[in-house]
Length: 78
Image 1 (spheres, rainbow, N blue to C red):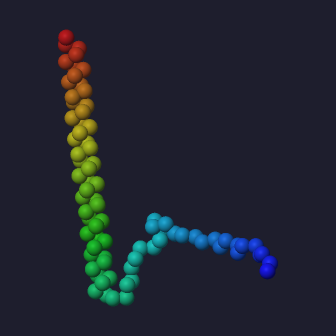
Image 2 (image 1 turned 180 degrees about the horizontal axis):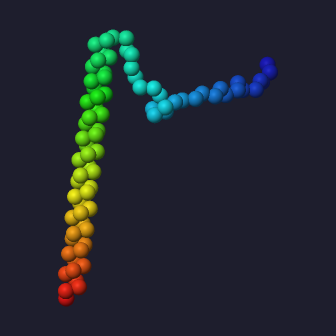
Image 3 (image 1 turned 45 degrees about the horizontal axis):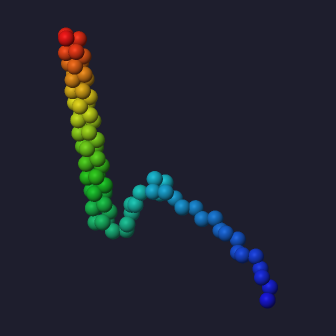
């Protein structure tokens, strides 16, 4: 009984989620339409959330600047 070398490892490549193509063309027109509607709804929701976060961040930054300026003026008055 001879002992041979272990089989060579095969190289397998895996695509990450960002590199894989979007899932489209399921073959069923009704499912394709529902999927497209779902994707569009998700994109609209993401845009709305990003817009809200941007507005809130702007308001918080302005308030922080006003508070900092107020404390600076208040400390300088004493």
